[in-house]
Length: 488
Ligand code: NAD
Image (cartoon, rainbow, N blue to C red; front, side, top):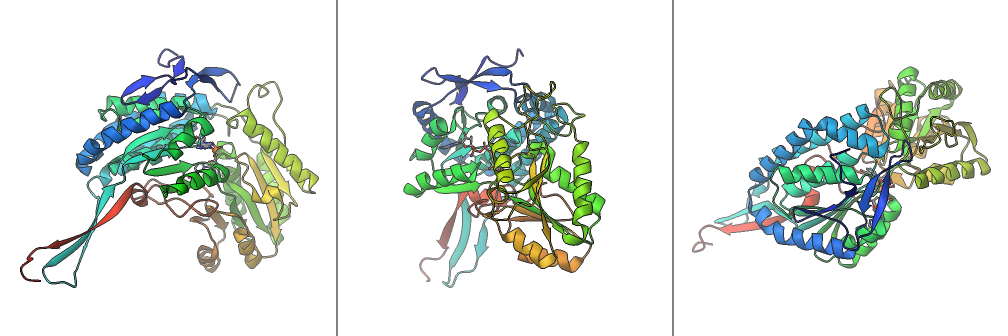
């Protein structure tokens, strides 16, 4: 592809650089296992240089009005929209997902850009009364400084958009560490920001591996906020390191998301929704449905419906396939191992459980859609996030037991219930300990104007997207104005 460099470089201060060490690694197409390109394998010197550039550029960027920053970000979103097919091709190539899915994700990134750009005109603070005569009291937003952003690969262009747009709108300069599995997407987004006239140094993009390029960003004392999307394990490490210097940290971590099917549910809708929640995007969603909790009265029938639907799924990278490969060979191996562990602990693998090794799939990283039953809620397969097309079924007597099982998890990201009973739905809404719930819908499906995030090991209380994202990337300043100092 003539538009793509042989080596994906860093963007630092408006220019493109390989890693200072000259090191690189291969970026593979997970649908075929073939090499796409090389990638700069950055380390501390590259990250330090990017942070310095951001620190230098930030005051001038923050001096623009939020409206002017929003205008520039709108330009970026429009340019991505103009080239949405180009971006979708990149996303599809790097993730193995279909062009159609990749296009949908690109549109979601554009929507996020447009939403955030509009917030430039709504950067509301608060005015209130004062107990002191002739004194006005107000609260205004202020930027934090340099934002260090670290992201996962599952929806690469949307992941960039969810962090970069709000961080920049709030007047911060950014150093983004793209995912090592989707470097071309991050690099190509950088190109658009550059073309749209975002000043040099305001958005820097460092490519590389987590411990070598991500960790130095977390350790850097000039990074004022670390915003991380990824696994709970890495999140814990980042929180510890950034906590040493009491830096602000936003964590968007994993999920083990339950979907409850009650005896009064529309079973066809519930089955279709379960299949999408569990398997779309090859289960690589923080909000994927990996615990399907089914009332005893309909359990056997519903299980058969799921097995039947799963048998008809097609795996591959084209628009006629239902889902593609998982992102890399290591993730695939850990999924196969987890399923094997479940089998050894006494669970039954109803379907799938293996890598696809037929001629069409053997070179890619394909996991068969997998349904498991009879796992105990305390088993590893019920508690650990697998981030693949694997889901477990649980049989419950009724609503109370279902809610108990929903809440019996280290994670608390999303939950869904299928029922026609309004009281059940409302009780579910009140009693379930997650950041997002869905009634008669899928476990996933967030919108740019709505907050997203979770409890427990799913996050540390921040919400991304929505206007709540502005709270992540700005700080509140309380202002008192004594307008007649001679009369107080
Ligand atoms: P991961 O935690 O392995 O990696 C995520 C990012 O962290 C990558 O860019 C990686 O290079 C970097 N990283 C790894 N080690 C690091 C270190 N020591 N210091 C700094 N950075 C480091 O996760 P993954 O497998 O790429 O992504 C899947 C995870 O992301 C799942 O847990 C999924 O649920 C989560 N996720 C969460 C959300 C959300 O909004 N809550 C959205 C998407 C994905």
